[in-house]
Image (tube, rainbow, N blue to C red; front, top):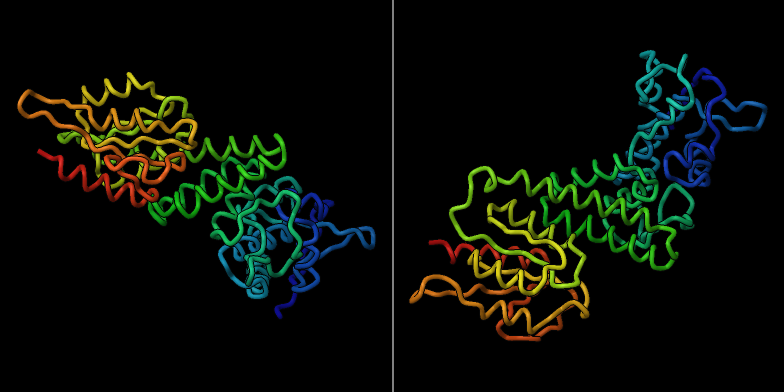
Length: 357
């Protein structure tokens, strides 16, 4: 194993507990990395007290970044120590400042945004403590991106949450980013909130706001907004009383990503307003979202599906998709029932294409 790089002490450094809170890991994980891989502070003040210098912090940040991307902890530790040695030889540190003249606060500003060891077989972490942190979210075998996103949300690190959501959309595309990163993390935060009283409500609000921001940015960047609409749009709305708009925002952004024009009416649209919008716009299709059975209204959806519009002699109607877990399967033959976001996008793309003049 690569020798642990020597470093000059920088002030008093930071304690293990302080560094753990900043990086969003447990102190046990940092101690385990030191014990297993030699990834600990180079200088220990007052005999036994552990203090982390800026060089030490930079090395641990790199360890966090590598393990979050799936690199085995032993290999990540070797790489992190090599980079620390190289930076020390060049007279700089990975944190972007030299050890001299750098305050502990500067050295420990949040660096990599996903800081727990990568999961091993069975979902347990490797290279650290197998026990679950008290703030851990119930993510099961979700993608590593979900774990990093959840940790950033629990730390209330708004910048990191936004960066990770944007990167997921850019790398995977909107549908996959929603189905495999955003939605699982939102569900995990929601379950944690429900089981902990109001303890995690601020985490849920932060994450939801940034998910909505990223989805709306993707919609605003779509081509059809810049070039206008020459085909009837797809109308999207939540039923009366339904305030859960994020899944519908994801559908709106995914359709825009594919060049399908949309008309988004958002949450809790009154029945009369919904009926009036359909008759005025003549949409290629209508997607109605219901999160719970209490807001799902089959009669209203059937009414929208039977609404006729257009000039006399050539009157038409809009196909209606009922989306969300609130609808019972097989509730109506005249209503289309997609199985998820990907299926809804496929169906609405097809309906829009067939509705072109």
